[in-house]
Image 1 (cartoon, one colour):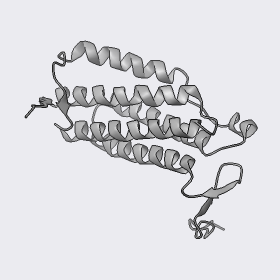
Image 2 (cartoon, rainbow, N blue to C red; image 1 turned 45 degrees about the vertical axis):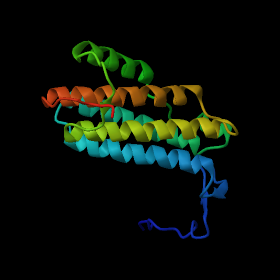
Image 3 (spheres, rainbow, N blue to C red; image 1 turned 180 degrees about the horizontal axis):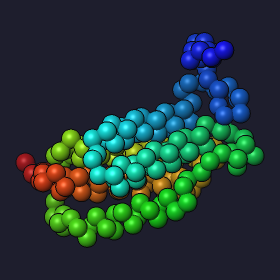
Image 4 (cartoon, rainbow, N blue to C red; image 1 turned 120 degrees about the vertical axis):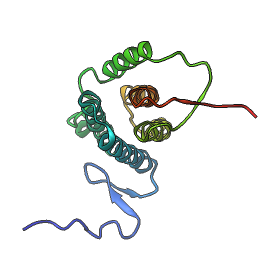
Length: 183
């Protein structure tokens, strides 16, 4: 028999972490991994607008890594956490390699740019801002719970990666980045 999607176990404002511990839905860990889920959804929209196979594949790897980080944030048992999937091998290095390549191809930035341009670039910028929030929340969780340093580093690199991806997507679409004008 197929299980129902609704369980009614969260109707009173509590939910279960990986391992079964019950916590309030206002727990910082839920805010952190919920924000990762939000970011993952934004990246899913972005993927639906990307036509280049290499970029689409890289985004899928990022989405899997975000799920892996979220599962760690949702687990308070260290022995159980050790069995959970982690970042893909070379995940941080892959982001850095992409950024190095894109920076060589893109014109030098002389001013801040406004989020936007092409639709895919706009979604990459949205992802960047959600990623920054997820990073801040993961750091906050780390003040009282275990958060792996590589996970915070990954989120930090990912926000930069999304910024450069947005610029690269605009370039590919032959859409100019819009510079911020003061005043």
